Length: 365
Length: 227
Image (cartoon, rainbow over all chains, first blue to last red; front, side, top):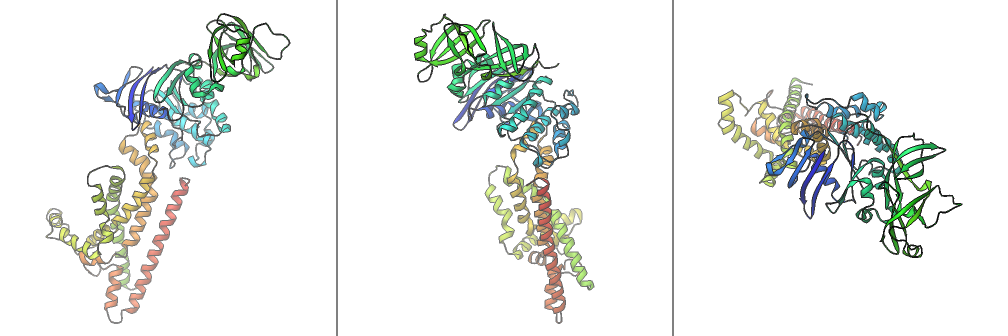
């Protein structure tokens, strides 16, 4: 487990962060640009020294300024993948990959074998190339491989997709998923794109103005009003975990709470775990069981709360059983006309094509 | 070519090569200090390093004579301890040449150093490289084009150093009479015009070749790094 409790002042900006990241697993550091994500990464990696605080990784103390401890970055065994890849231009891909591998202390066990890493990241055909001959996505894959081969205990990914266009992102994301699913290494993933977080992380630390404003599993944080302040009203939506029951003709049926939800997705097998987001603006509320609709998902629910949202909208929280809740964003007039109150039984209507789902596979140990 | 011409040519090449060899380690260190280190008197140090650019070469030669002459504080010690004499020797000529071209080399390396992406050194640090390791495995290869360009320019300039050499090392045939000194001597000699012209042609060709090699080397290196 990574336990962070550090403070750092840089000119006008001050960062004060306290959170823990479970290992293994992917913890997302999420926030707007300039919220202190990159400073935090530099502090964890050891490239910056905090003004005060403590940092531990597993049983190892990395920073404790009260006791005068601050381990240098090169001894922390924390792999970093930077936004701009930072491949060494005078070395070819293999030289870059082996740079860290050659500097691993002798007493450190090799968890990530050279051939495994090269195979997983699909780097076989790139080994003799120079960094300037690689595409942006390829550069990031090499940077990931280089970090892994230094046998780190923790991998920090600092917005690895931010400098890539949409097509390149889609090309790199599957490798990040493979990395998460096939290597049991804790990952801290920095991003300002919630879509990436949804796809990769199970734990979210929300940063705003240099402070941790929310910290918890992605489902809880997805319903936190402070996330809404960052992503905007349109991107608000509950993130839910579900188990695949069956998959047929492009639709997977998941068990989420007491409900069964149909999600449009490529082939997945029964028993697989998926993380889905139900955007609040995509949920329709009905007070009677509807009939004759194209919508695939009609879920019985009970209203938990009705809270005012921006403008003339309200945010309705809906209980769908087993502690799973949905968010629905509707106009205040609709809420009035339907007399929506906490405790009232309703139906939530969600189109299967409006759901975004991503498969999570348990790491192979 | 006559024996005097080949002597002067070889001597010039040897003096220039040795001057570059003297120069490089110090120039890299000084360039590093000037770009990376923060210390009191940095501006003064910077100005001191660039002095040979603005001082008359004769003054540099004179100062060297005062310091490194057989009775000078450094020269006397070298002579007494190791039996090394610099004044009026070809090694002394190389030293004078090195001092004159030092600012050129420092400047070339410094520009390269300023262009090195510090992020790459940070990346190397997270991959387990210590400070000296980072300098040797990352920084030095990245500034290599600047180092080589500086070295070649210093070599080409060193072939023609006159004032500092003649003041500190004198004009001894076969020992310190390099191309420009030989040319000067030829001009002072009756019927030396033809010799002077040939020596001038040799100097010209050497200088041109040096500059072309410098350009070619840095182009090759840049291409390898994709810039």
